Image 1 (spheres, rainbow, N blue to C red):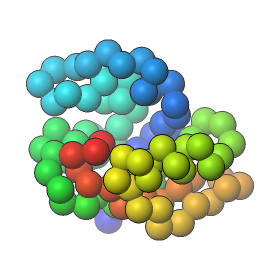
Image 2 (cartoon, one colour; image 1 turned 120 degrees about the vertical axis):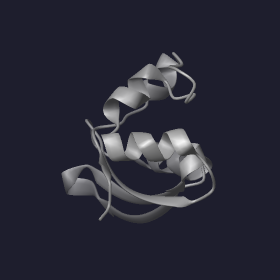
Image 3 (tube, one colour; image 1 turned 180 degrees about the vertical axis):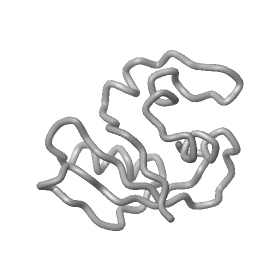
Image 4 (cartoon, helix red, strand yellow; image 1 turned 90 degrees about the vertical axis):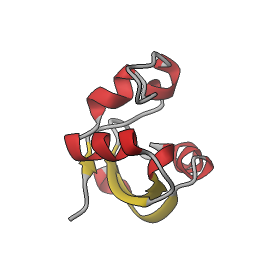
Length: 92
């Protein structure tokens, strides 16, 4: 089963407000499903498979941002504004 995260966009990085000991931004934490949030809190290099939905049209800048965080793009669904990623838990 692949954990799915709610809409995630570039405003998450801009918010920059850190939450508790997990190191996640408050905005990132509230947009993650409980399963993804738990994986992010544990961290580590274990790859996590995600389906990320975007509020706006998916563009190359967002794909490049995910790759810079260590993500491997599995598949993108442009019309649905979704991308399937494999990313190290520590990069969530």
